[in-house]
Picture (cartoon, rainbow, N blue to C red):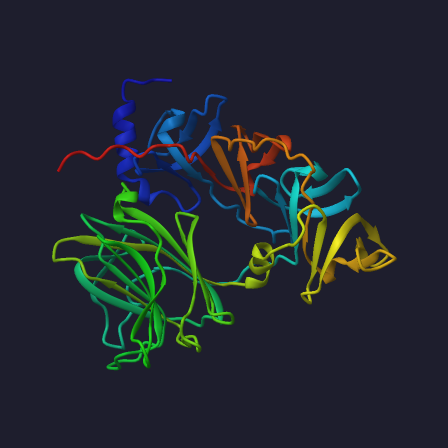
Amino acid sequence: MRTSNMNSWIALLLGVGGTGGLRADDLTLAGQSRLTGTVRSINEAGVVELSSALSPDSVFLKADAVAMVNFRAPEVVPNPPGTLIELSNGDLLPAAIEGLDERNLVALTADAGRLVIPRTALKSIQLGVRQRQIIYTGPRNLEEWSRHGDGVRGWTFANKSLVASGPGRVSKQFEAPSQFTFKFTLKWQGSPSFQVYFADPLTPNVDPVDRYYLQFNGAGLEVKRESSQGQHFQTVIIPSVTPEKYPTNEVDVEIRVDRKTSRLDLFLNGEAEGAGVDPVAKPPAGNGVTFVSSAPAGATQEIRGIEVSEFDNTRVRHRSEDRGNPAIDSLISRDDDRWSGHLTRIQGGAEGTVFSFKSDFHEEPLELSEADVSTIFFAKPDQEAAPVPPGPFVLRLRGEGLLHVSSCTLAGEDVSAQHPLLGMLKINRTGISALERPGAKPAAKSAE
């Protein structure tokens, strides 16, 4: 490989990284710069080989220079299996279940083949997992955003982002269900100064109104409830975060809203940062979103990666609830019936997969069809093994999967990864949405 012009080629790639082809891989470097192209290989040392039409030679990036690789999605993305297996270390594996006995679970995956998983490595199984419906992704242009019909104030559209250089306000109405997930990425110069309203009725000239909002400024971040009656503002979630936690001046936000149970959950950069219950008896019924920039003139703030999708809280609620005695298995049905005892086997039957569960309250084992089962918790071993330290790589699989692996190499269409519980895996790259290196440190900021 020629190296004399490497720096100039990387500079060129960085300069046009946001304009790569629609089906290119997207790399985030440790300093939050971005490259696009095709990842040709990843060797045992973690060196990434990137091919781009803008460079005559492949660009080789050392392991600690790359924080994340987002692999291009295949032209046809199959529906994920309806089962999500949770391992004892918290990893998640989308798969279909072939069978289970006293020692092992046999799972069939679309991209890693047939896996035999020791029963001691299982934490839970979630069934009936269906693909969530995406209601909106964007922004796509400025014209689709307005404020009470009088257009957009203070915002422009650039690089697939809403951009404000000072104060600005912009809104959009959605057909959001009673349970929905709201995602977006905030980016700022200096100090953040955002207000993001959601479940907003977008009613003009009415103050106060019923809605939620997220506020992020130099003092920190919080999620609040605005009410038209009673106490005007009430805090719902206060995570212990300030802008200093995000040295790259950027944060991914995810808010899960369950208006059926009046619960809100907040995630920042994929990590849970708090949950709260709406203090008002009746949740807001609005479906609008309003982004407000309160930054001073000349201070640029951006919002991108906006997504609104449906959210089924049943699975999350079952996973997070008190499972009872951890020394025995537990089963929750689709109808919220709960049993404790022992899952003796899973096997195919004349009418589909059958779960045999020996309950403490029944003489004969319960025979349940897959359609009747929501969640299974497995008994913890009498002597738990020492916790396995997380590997330096995280593989995000299509269909909500996530695996921490100690090594990861890519050659052609195959990714080879060493997992502490599953052993050596060979996964087709089309089944992997992203490869992350959580330990990658952002580049230090230059003094202003």
